[in-house]
Image (cartoon, rainbow, N blue to C red; front, side, top):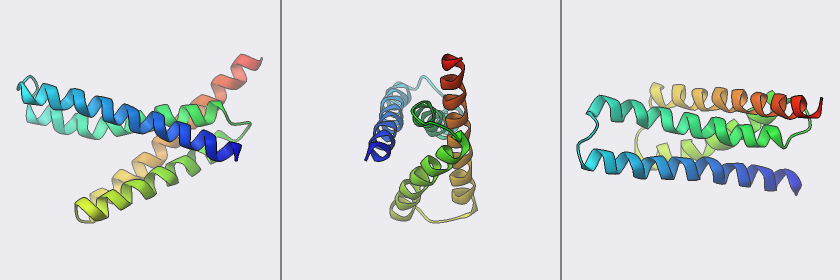
Length: 122
């Protein structure tokens, strides 16, 4: 039960960051403060940063093997992303590349989180 709780809390961090930055990006787009290319780049970067933050939280609360925890968290996010891709757009090669990037970024975040935890303990 404790594992499920830490994944749900981290998922809340990830979705919260995505929601907040999406609202900010929408406001900036509404007032034409950013160009289309910048907005398209930020639409890709925001979920990756949010995934790293959520995976960092999972890794920081994990005991060992940050990469495995990151893979689990990345797969959880990938399943959620895949469901949204199925509902709102079509499946293509870029969708799979995006999902792989989410898994890799969650691995990196979780490894950073567990290394930070181990550095605090020493």
